[in-house]
Length: 207
Image 1: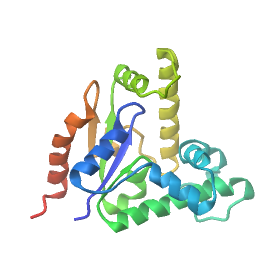
Image 2 (image 1 turned 120 degrees about the vertical axis):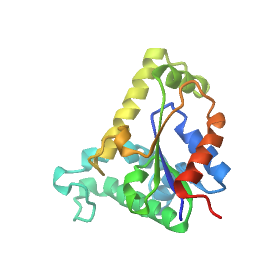
Image 3 (image 1 turned 90 degrees about the horizontal axis):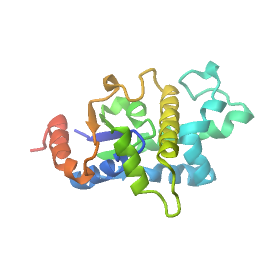
Image 4 (image 1 turned 60 degrees about the vertical axis):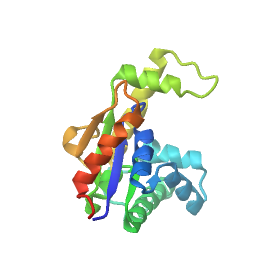
C-alpha cells in the first residue's frame, strides 16, 4: 500500500518540522517548499508570488461561478493565480503517483483524497505557538506577544480560506482528519517514534 501522509498545521505548531522528521524516520520524501519552487520554475513566476498566491490571493481572483473546478476558460485578470492552483494540483498528484511521501500544507489532503492519504492536523496552544515562533524568529525581528498573536491569526485565517476553495470541510475540524496531534510545549522530535508506530499501524506494516 502506498503511504501518502498529508500534514495540515496551525502556524507555530511545529507541523513543518514534524512532517520532515516523520518522513526521515520512515525513509520517504517530504515535500514542502519544493512545491513552490517547482511551480515558480515551470511557470516563470517569482517564488514569493507563488507562496503568496498559494495561501492568500487566489481567492481574490477566484469567481464564485467557478465553484471548485479549474477547468474553465480563464479571464486575463485571474489567469496567473489559477495557473498556480492548477500547477499545484498537478505537482501534488505527480508526487503521490511516484510513491510514498509526506506533503506539508497546500490542501494536499483534499487534492489527493483519491489516494486515501493519512490526514494529520497539528495544533497547539497559543502560548506554545507564540513561544515557538519567537524562538525561531529571524534575527532582528522582535515582535511583541500581541503582534505575534495577530500574525498567527492572520496566517491561520488565510489557510482556512484557501481550504474553502477546494472543499466544504472545515480547516482544523477533527472530522476532516484522521489524526489530530497537540504539540503544546513538546519537543517535536520526541513525538516521532509514537507517530511512526501509528503510521505503520494505519497503513499496515509491510511483511
